[in-house]
Length: 157
Image 1 (cartoon, rainbow, N blue to C red):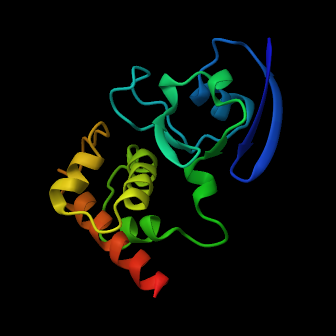
Image 2 (cartoon, rainbow, N blue to C red; image 1 turned 30 degrees about the horizontal axis):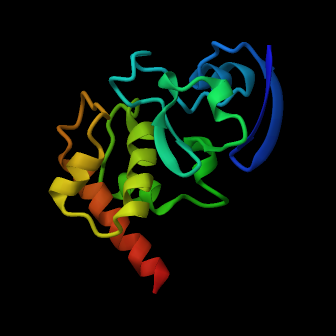
Image 3 (spheres, rainbow, N blue to C red; image 1 turned 90 degrees about the vertical axis):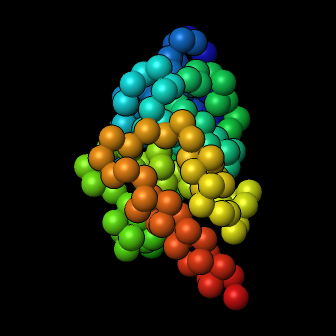
């Protein structure tokens, strides 16, 4: 067993974990944060994306011990009293259907917009590469990210 110390959704945690435990399983099974879905378990779909020190990572490809000392944000922790602008935009622009890929898409979009506050449609598509949606055809997802960029810029004024 290895001890890890992490901050998950604003709460400091110190836990003993098996060295081979994946971050997605730590979040879901140890912490009960089931908003992070397990999609493919092979890092292909992106559904399990979380923010690790502000950067999007596929939590099925990160060991929990690798997150020691890190700040982790899940979809459940993204809203801090009110929805994040990306969550609002996904709702307003119908950027989801079944919702399975949505946590990963939203968190990847948050990372993208932090690095590029005014992305073009092609930059949005490239930034979300590695996140698979089997329902929407991506048009409303791109529209949602574009709208989120506008909401973030408006909030900053």
